[in-house]
Length: 299
Image 1 (tube, rainbow, N blue to C red):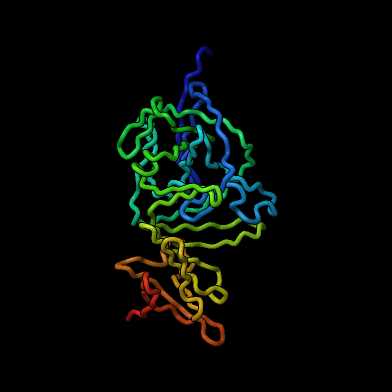
Image 2: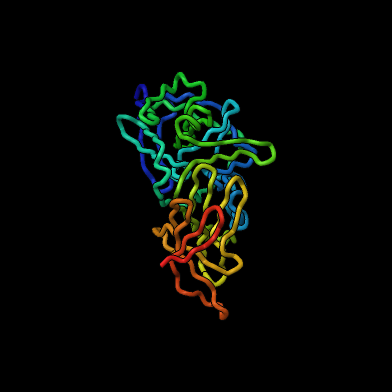
């Protein structure tokens, strides 16, 4: 039929934002799967990030792993990871892929990425040739020293200072002992359903991250067995709130319930406690001081 006409097809899926492109005009490049641990906003990604997956007969690697190209780490713009890193993504047939830094104070609801694929260390990606705009600026990918890549129909961004720090506002560091950690100011609500039969604990968590302060609240299926589920962390020092008095913080197990709000150095939420017979008392509104960890009951 002569030359193949290359088409670009975009689809927004529940688990990812996919941009499909024929490989006919895309330059193929060799990439590899990192062998070090990667933690994004406190959530471990990559091999062995999902305990019990092997027992369920599932490989432990991600379907969209981080990649290495020219010794630079590349991050996939899946639906989960873009939300986790506070990015808004959109696709337009004429303008291509648009990515913008999101509002760090806007709560988000998104599911955990539970897609698995057995990965070889050495892989092949393609250099993106469709239009990409970042924070309103068009990217000339042909001139980029570390170009955007396409892998399994997902766009990947290089973890360079220009994109990570200047455009997206991320903080990141690497050490041989702890691996790579990427942190983005973000307030969000995420939940996951676990892997059936894998022994991986299903649950929900609400998380707030801002300027080195991290607050998270775990949500469990039973309040009778869970207490002290509010955590406050500054510079790596973690304090668990309510453990001694067997206090349970937050509202019902509802994905639309954000459980807490941060205002003026206080965490505003609900609290219930276990009575001597082991039953949970009615929830009352409280606030917890971020510095002193003092809890005050609100009228």
